[in-house]
Structure formats: structure tokens, C-alpha cells
Image (cartoon, one colour):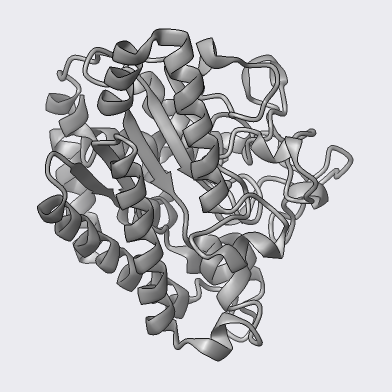
Length: 353
């Protein structure tokens, strides 16, 4: 914990100087997103799955109080990143019929809540696997070239910032939940390596399609998600440290993957964006940012509910989500998303500004 506090204090001390960086959309003309519910802006609304959030109270603090399909009370982290880069304040979902290629030209997300690196993870809730997210991206490239012309589209593709955020579901919705599945095939360390192989191949495919600026997102302290704490009865409803240790170990491997691929792929600038320590700091030192509640979400009881079980009719839902680190039993509030994205913009992503 001392290390975490020192790490975050160093960030806070340099924050003022970092805010002097000029925000501009010139170096990064678009932000292109792949991943799970942490970065899905509504793609799951258009597919037959229960992994949805396009209903109240989700989105109650979003512009127009609109439940877009984001798993939060408002904006998600990539929305704040887009704004910090001088682009639009929200990144639309590729499958949302309300948007077109003119909207997607400066930012788009192909993410699907419930997915992971492992195709078996996406099967759990019948969501979009990452290979299909890549197929949608290839379709996007064709539409972008038709809209902007070959030369300008290729420039956008090359200069865009690509953000990848997934992995939590592979462990919590798949490996640890379905013992007859991957758990019967791999030890957890072997499964981590299996996922790292998939992540590496995914990045190589993106590189082959023209991506040169990529952010590889790490795992949060997943043992501290309200759902995991609520079910950790034997552990006194504290964080499940074994899950946190897996997140730390996996993050270390993601960081090494980034180092390896930067050496192997000419012209690639791949950064590892690690939310673990800032997230842990919010949970351990909530008052620093004005939070009151860290062990449960704002919606309903805050211990088990997400998706359809987090609904407008539940009288237990809190009135002020800004006092909560988590919105539902699995996902952060808009305020938490803002703090974490701000931290990443000023650290891992600062070189792209």
C-alpha cells in the first residue's frame, strides 16, 4: 500500500505541470476502441444478448439523461480520453444506427459488453467476440476510404489512437465461473499465457491493418469489484486478494508483451495503460476524491445487480452517484471513469498528445 500511495502522490505532484500540455486533435485525428463493457457505448443494444444497459437508471447523468448502452450512470473512460485529445466528448458505438461514417471518422467503438480475449468468454453471454470486432473494423476502413478518399483515410488510420480494454471477463465470467471449461484445461498461469498469446495476435492484426498508435489496457483490481466482495463471505466481504494478484500478474505480462511488440514491429508505438494502481487508490483512499462508498455500487443494493437487475424500479438506488466508486456491482461510476481516464491521459497516453 505504501508503494501505491507513493506512486499516486508522485502523479498528483506532477499533475499541474502535465496540464500545461496543449490538447490538440492534430496528432490523433480519431480514437478507435476495442473491448468489453468498460468501453462499449451501445453495440450490445443491436444484438440478442442479456448483457445490455440501454434502460434507466443507466445513463441518468449522461447528456439528455439517455441510457445509451454504456454500463455507467454517464460517460465511460474512452469518452473522457476523446475529449482530452480535443475530439468529441463521446465515442459512438459502431452498430448504433443513429450514427454514420461522418460520426465515426473521428472516433468509434467496436466494443461489446461481456466479451474477452477468449472466444469462449464471448459465448457465455452471446456477445461479440474480438475477431468479429476486427471484422467490423475492416468494414469501417472501407467506409472511411469511401468517405474521405484513400489518401486521407489512410492517414487517419495511421495516426488514430487505438484503445484496447478487456480481460476481466475472461477471468471472472469465464475461468472462475465455469470450472468445467478453461479451468479444466489450464492452470490460471497457463490461462494468462493463453490470453497473452491472443492479445499479441490481435495487436499484430491491427498493425497489419495500419494501426501504429495503440494503448493496451490492463486489468483493474478485479477482486475489489462489489460483486466479488459480496460473494466473498468467508473472507468477511473484503477484496478477493487472489483475484487481485492474478490481475497484477496478468498486467505484468501485458506490459512485457508491449515491450516485445514495440521491438518486433517497426513504427509501432504501443503503450501499456495500467488502471490498477489509481483504481486501488480510489478504493483505499476514497475521501481524497470525495467518495464515501467503495464496497458496493450505487444501483439497487450495489452488491449483485448489473444489467437488467439494475433497473429504474429499485428504490435502493442511491441519489448521488458521485459519492460511489462503483455504479453497479461490476462497473465504475462516471466520476470514477473521469478520474481514471484523466490519470491515464497524463501518464501512459501523454506521448500521443
